[in-house]
Length: 302
Ligand SMILES: [Zn+2]
Image (cartoon, rainbow, N blue to C red):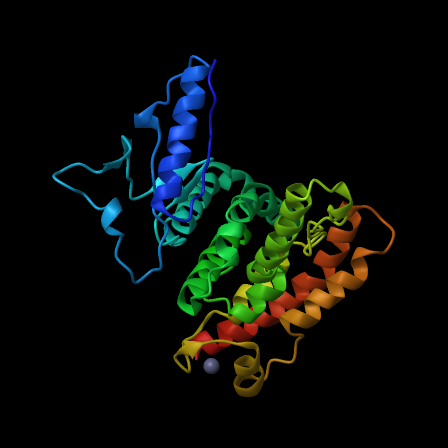
C-alpha cells in the first residue's frame, strides 16, 4: 500500500517541522515509511529575495528534517520553482506544440482553417489551461507579454499564419485571452475551496467556465492565405505590407481581414452542412485572394 502526491503548504519552518513529524508518526503507525528521496521541500519567496538561512546549504547538506531542499519540484506535471517563474512551463508548451505539429503536419497541410483551429484547441489549449492558475497571479508585464507570444506562436504554427501577423489580427482569430481566462479559473477555484473549507455545498458555485467554441468554424484555409498576404513583404517600398499600406499606396480595394471574418460568420449559421458552407465560402474568398495576390505581386515586380 502507498499514499502519494501529498502536498503541504506551511507559512514557516516550525510549522513545516511539525507537519513532517505528524506525517512520519502517522506513517509509522500505519506501517508505512516516508520516502525522503521522493519528497522535496521548496521555499516560495519573492523574486528578488534570497532563500532563508534555514533552507540554505549547510556543510554540504541541503535538507530539512531529512527531506531534501530542492530548487524545483514537479508536482502533478507542474514544475514549480521558488519564485514561481512561469517561463520554464511556458517554454515546454512551446516545445511540445512543435513536436505535435511535426507529427500531424502531413494532415494539417491539407486541412481547412476550422480543422486546424480544432486541433490547436484539442492538443495545445489544454496544456495552456493546465498552467492557467499558475499564470493568474503573474503581474509582470514583460512575462505576460512573453506568455502571450508563446501562446500566439503555437496558434500561428497550427494555423499556418505568418509569423509577422499583427497581434490585433491574431487576437481576432484566436479569440482567447489567457489573462481573463486565468482570472475566471482562479475565482472559480477560490469559490470551490471556500465551499470545501466551510463544508457547505450551498456555497459551491453552480456556474462553469464555458469552453470557447471554435470561432473559426467552417472557415476555409484560403482565409488564412488572405490574412497572410497582408503581412507579406512589399519589395517596392521595402516594408511589411498591411491593409492600409496596400490600400493607400497600391490601390487595393478589397475587404479587410475583419470584414472577411464577419462575412464568414454571417454564413456560419445558415442552413447546409460544413462542406457546403466551406465550398460556398471558398467561391467568395478565392477571387479575393487572387485580387490581393495580384496587388502584392505587382508591387513586387515593380
Ligand atoms: Zn508598398
